[in-house]
Length: 433
Image (cartoon, rainbow, N blue to C red):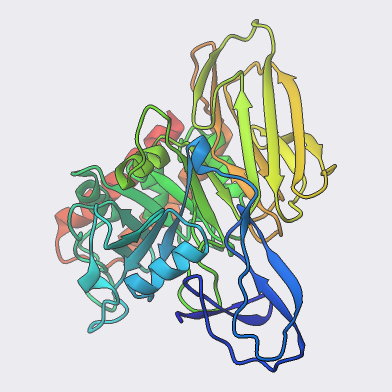
């Protein structure tokens, strides 16, 4: 029952807890089952008795993130039916699945009729499927508009559909009108020569979060943005668009404090506040001076050092655990315990300049056992994070988009061209100020 998926080179089936399979009696069979990173995988060799009609196996949970206020979500997948996404979301132990409708061509918008915006389209205990939209310009960028009160049209603009008389900033503004969340999708893919308006929108705070997927090329641009003072948390998405990808293979863990009750709205606000971890499986924790992920810490350059603590737990072997300060690895360990594989780091730091601190497992999203926290920002002597050289470098990257708008964009309305150029130049001014 349900869809199949290719995992580790073999076909698997999603089931709702029960299935029927014809098997020869009197034979030994190997049964394997998995249910997300919080359950111990099953792999048992079983001898079937003659005429045996049933097997009953039990999945054991080895940790419970919900009890600690952490809720898992996949912020982007496509093509699934809502009920198919619900089956897969339950099997992968996801609390929320964001199924994004998009304009495939002039005549087809897969998923659009199921749009649910701020409400679940379908749900079951501990899993909700919410249908929102992916809005695309081929050059300027791709935005996931989550928790929207209504679809934001047009879903696509620019060649070959229409002129370029629109902007990503317009999409952001409409999404934010009723507490929507804007995610820059494919932000860390290998970017073309022309940069994206989305980068300027991140700088200006119009984009709320940056997506990390298994195919994200490098985290180096993200580190540069944080070091230039751009405060954009990260979210994890599978980007699933076929049965060759596992839903939730890259997921977002968002922390909803105990003073709030969990809902789709509080999960969205946890993401907006930067209380997120992106992971392909390992559960990573970070505390800076006793403050959690997403915090801003006030510090003085002559104050006593504060403590940075990072921990990881995983049912599979994670990548090395590292603490980063301003993009530099300041502590590292690959000394993991037995299953569950655990490790910890604890160091002291007293930065002289404003910076950011994060923890990660594995250096790249393509690495096995990858996980990464959103940063904790440290503001020293009341001064903002501002690496001027990086700011100027990002401003030059935005220059390429300005040149594209001025020389290649197709604008029927001069005021629309002026509006997008104004957004790009505002971002440059902020970076260079």
